[in-house]
Image (cartoon, rainbow, N blue to C red; front, side, top):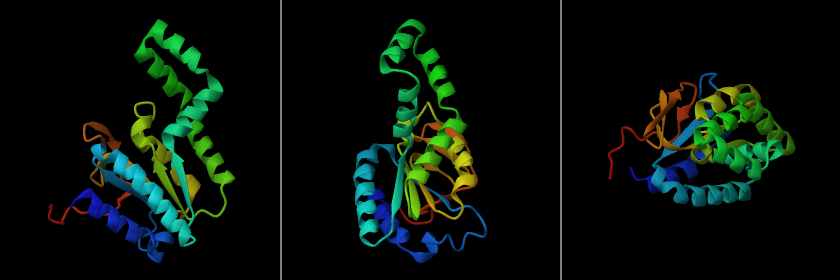
Length: 195
């Protein structure tokens, strides 16, 4: 099934009462992963914007959390871009990445996301975007594990540039992120013939 067809099915699914109210999940957390080919990133960004506008017209509020933008906000509060550049020139890219990962510990990201949620009222679902851009500073499975206690029955849809088998994540279809069993693959088309 083409990504455009999956996106149409996604639009329909997000409007359903069972989806919005997390019914039929057998007491599991309503975490969903919409995986897609990384080369379709621009299509996804454009479509996500349209989906949010369409849902809001139907009085369904979406909180979009861009993981990459949150990382940038956290880093800007801790260190200037100039200091980052100087550090990279003197110590190298690998050491810079280690330093950035230390500044973006899971609890720090969780608190920043919690603050975004506290600043927004009445949202009925969360879209987690910017996952590919935040890598390798942040790993998706770590974020998802840390968000579980925060959300209750609010559906979280992670837009994932890569592959999710229902058991493990493969970012860009190349890098194994980790095993992750708590999310459902949204618009699972494994048994649908490819066109």
